[in-house]
Amino acid sequence: MGILINLVCAFVAWKTYSFAAALRSVNYIPGMRPPFSPLSLFGAILPTSWWNPGLNWPWELRKTDVVKQLLGNEGKTHLVKPEELTSALLLWGDNLVSANGEMWKRHRRILAPTFTPTTYSLVVKETIATYKEMIINENWDGKDSLFISGFNRIPLRFALIIIARCGFGLPMSWTEEQPGTMSFGEALAVVSETAIPRLILPNWVYKLPIKKLKDLDRAWATLAKFMHEFVDTRRQDIANDRETFVQRGDLFTRLVEAYDGEGKLGLEEQEVIGNTFTFMFAGHETTACGLNATLGFLAIYQEEQEKAYREILDTIPAGEDPTIENITKLRHVLACFNEALRIYPAGVMLTRDVPVDIPLKVARPVEKTIVLKAGSRMIIDMVGIHHNPHTFPNPDKFIPSRWYEVPEHDVSIFGAGPRACIGRKFSHTEALTFLALFLREWKIDIVLAEGESREVYEERVMGKAGRVGLAFGVGEISLKLTRRVALS
Image (tube, rainbow, N blue to C red; front, side):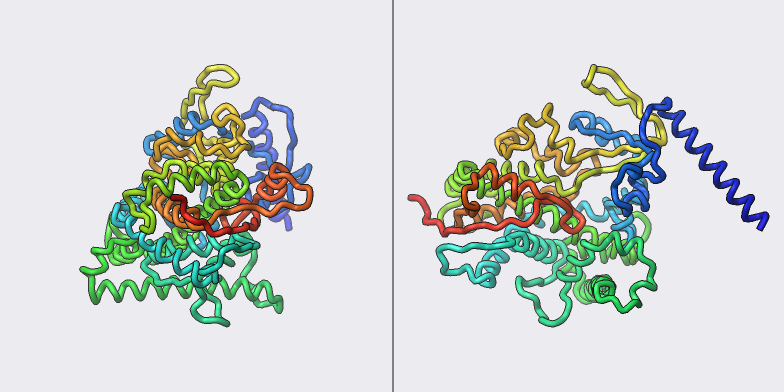
């Protein structure tokens, strides 16, 4: 009993000292003194209230040029992604997104060669094929007008199929292959939505007679089974016909080859699984959220939709499919997609821990240099950055033209520096091809409530954003589609 009391006293003394040291480090700035950090497990799962906004105040960046200073030198400053903030991805194993230092370099060295012109040409080809499949299976073929409630499911399904086919060589179709059983897509959707409960719930709770918990556990087990089967099948395929699969050079083949590799080009089995899950969810949720928001805004802003339609007709010959060469000329269409992702960035924040003192030049409120002290935590507020009126005037307005002169590598919605999103061009290629096909065939519009203006509709519908799986995006939208007759 005496030992326990001593341990409790020591813990209280340590916490008191830590508390005092934290106050001293910020010069005793006035403020609230809550019990949990907002980025700790308890801080994340407990509801926000007067006592739970957090104590460990991080630096928060909301200016593009300052963020580029920080992330542009990430290779030299060795910034660290906090493990506790990538724990949802680490449930499956180390991966490119969560890794740091030499481990990150190893993962990128293996995966970067898969993002090539050959891959992007395949994305165009499969996007065209999937679009035609979608039209047939959604029973849109031959119809002149449609009203689609809950349109969100369309881009989510579409983007999942594209990453499955182009990134992993999986022949996923628009319809579920085996009715009555949980498909790969269904399992992935449940897993994306339930990462936080999976992190905090002990294993024994899944034995309780509660259907939701049983379904959750089944989804995670099903997804794990699928991914291990994918790996085993691809290993066998490579063993039987290595030349064919290596020539394809898809992401999954590179991962599985690395499973049998060594040293700088080798991955453990859980690293293969971890990267498989990460690219599956990140590779489709970002694009899907962007497409959903793009079409939602174009349905409201008819003049921007008309510009996109005219540009598509001028760029892609009538009756012909898009190609990798002509979609890159769709400047306005790409700007619409980027602008939608600016308003609703799929990743709401990037977080880094600072291992060394880093000077940053800032312009506001006055020009000066500030020093981020070693041990600081940085939160790069992607929503705040892309709604900063100093960088984006009228930040809440959908203005695609603001992206016209921005080079692809400077599109800040995909991050900055050496750790910017490796799949940026993959996403752009898929989005441009889909939008070219969709907007060429359909005029899209909204359905207003009685007495409602487009401005009020935009606030009511597009103003509802939140978590979509592990990403951030606009809520449910509905669209009215009218088949176009090509202009002469």
